[in-house]
Length: 78
Image (tube, rainbow, N blue to C red; front, side, top):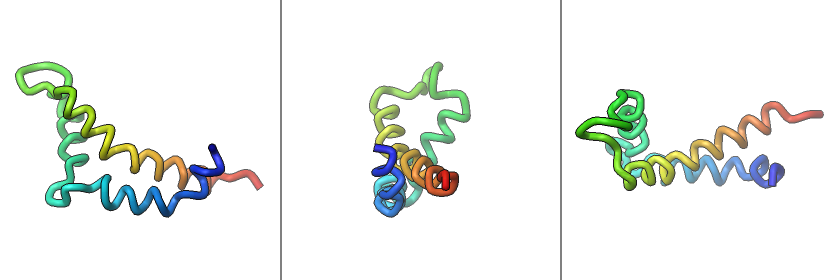
């Protein structure tokens, strides 16, 4: 599995640039990250609902996989 993640960096890049940034003006992931970092995601009147957390998972997974893949390629043992 580690080899598959390491070798599929191009697939993860394409997924990040398409699904990870959709819809493109502004990207959902940017708004959700701002919402989480702003502190209103967990409590209050405008707390994030289940669909919002699913949105973070959906749009954030390609970015996480890309970072892991790039990290494995940069720090590989020789």
